[in-house]
Amino acid sequence: MATVVTLPRLSDTMEEGVIAKWRIKVGDKVKRGQVIADIETDKATMEFESFDAGTVLKLVAPEGEAMPVGAPIAVFGQPGENPDAAGAPARAEPAAPAKAEAKPEAAPAKPVAPEPQPESKDEVKAAAGAAEASATGDESPAPKTSAPATGPEGQVDRGRIPASPVARRLAREHDLDLGQIQGSGPHGRIVKSDVEQAIAKGPTARPVARGPVGPAEHAPAVSLAAGTPAAEVDEYGRPYISRPDRTVKLSQMRKTIAKRMGQAKREIPHIYLTMPIVMDRAVALRAEFNLSVDGTKASLNDLVILAAARALRKHPRVNAYYTDNGIVERGDVHVGVAVALDDGLIVPPVRFADQKTLKQISIDVRDLGTRAKEKTLKPEELTGSTFTVSNLGMFGIEEFCAIVNPGEAAILAVGAVQDEAVVEDGKLVARKRMRVTLCSDHRVFDGAESAKYLQTLRKLLESPLSLLT
Picture 1: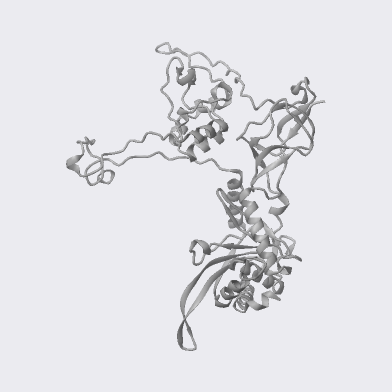
Picture 2: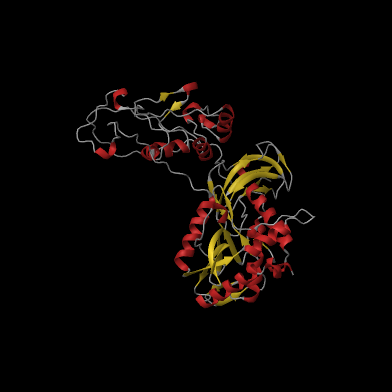
């Protein structure tokens, strides 16, 4: 009997996903546990291992289209079985849409030839949204004619070039002209593999109209419309080039970040406290630690994570979160480490960070960071943090405020370590200082508790030998 494969929930916050790439095709035999697709979720792109076995009868879900959790994506069964008997709708192959109901006839001034009927779902959207395509920087729609125009290789040009969302995104990222790419999908639709082949051959730049370069006496005469504002021409009287806006499709990760951060700013009353910390001893300790014979290297951020975790032991209210039934103080300390990716960030936690050594923290942070960028973290490795450290010091940021993650009570925003002039005992001396800002949920604790936590953190970092015991 045919089995419908549905889109799985690969993270606790996942509501929809996108098939980034199919690893199987119709006719393939699939075993349980075999990777059949790469699925883009709200946190990362993950491999999906099949829970079922059988022959692939149909791929229902196309690459690049967002679908809710639980939606049919494929049908498995025995060779020769009817995949439609399983009840999964056909979505991978675009089908001709049903014709609209006839409207009451009106007497036109002149007979008008009927426009060509679009043949796929993508073309229906394109025909209804040609103005939007022009505004977003996609291919400009062709003028309406009584018959469809034909392009290269006999492709029909109905305005917007048919292409999958993933293919459009790749083409924009590599500055490729979709009009120069031959589509291999249904009805000439351009798919991801077509763009990847074009990338391998080299980009085809879109022609851009440019004004003459050089002094006015070397430039051809430019006729401007009467009344053109001075702000719209350069010093030689030539009009500036107007470039269209473009709309970048939201990834699943960016959608979730937007939703959760918007929720956090609306619902959580934030309070921000900043404190400078002298890091001379911490810098020296780190340099000595990195000379150890086992070759383990630690960063200053590793020291900050360890100090932040140890400080949470003394201030359990900071390691908590708010509920309508009461404030929950966490028993364990799992420090989330913000990792920046191309399309957002994720926060994998260093578990039991307060009980680990500097060496263990260093190893964990590097492993999580590497696998996060490779998109190989498991769903359970992306959840469970009780406190977060976000460090932008490597970008030269002196100090900043961050947004508290829902389910936590605070996040530590860490700035760069800089040489500064400091007055000590009436003398001006040079010190390495770092500013940290504790961003807290004011419902869980007040400014006094924030200040006490920062004092403990400063004491640990300014006397870092205590972190090695």
